[in-house]
Length: 271
Image (cartoon, rainbow, N blue to C red; front, side, top):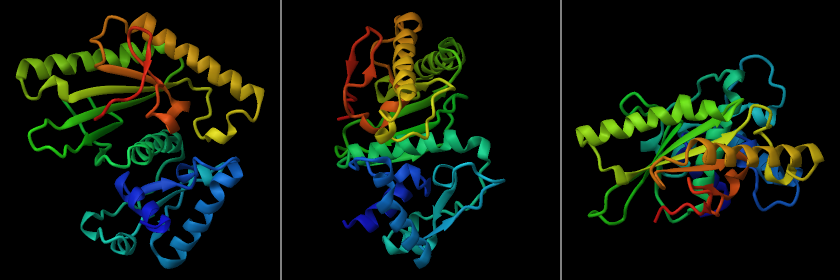
């Protein structure tokens, strides 16, 4: 599949909405270079009516990061997927732009890093009152195998204790309800907690991580916080039901960047 169609397919797969920043090139050496080809593609898509700009509410501080684009019906037809098309040209609040962008970064990384897997992403699911930021369904090629679900929580909190008390406790209640009602097999579920603090700039691309001592220091601080979260609050949780990753590692989530309750770091096994 050529690059022009691949990007549109990925855009549809992650929900039909994204920013230029989400579609940066991971292989580029510089931040500017990482957006150069994407800018050209988006410009041509707009000219051909394959995508549309979603007019922002207010004036965004950075258009590349905060202005979203959506696939059009013509764009879906161009990649022969018009049946899957849904209208998505709804204005987005600038207050939610960062969290929305983080969700699309994670979803797109799954597509890029596991090209042989078939994923379905949902952002509006509810399981016994628990609403994950992303519910990822992994389609099995073997009809006898159980479908697997990744429950992704993107936690940008001031303190790590809030992650445990406000979210993880609710997931423990969710799993108790599933077990009691026997609605699913618990082995189908894996919770992925993606954490950073409120001072880290989640719009940064990997090419920018070493651009200043302040960014390097902040990344090290977040790494320390997530280790503390796991070791201090989560060591008694069911082993490997939960995995924890700092958000700045989103672009390599297939590598050993996931923290387990015993303090180890492992790759994500979704085979």
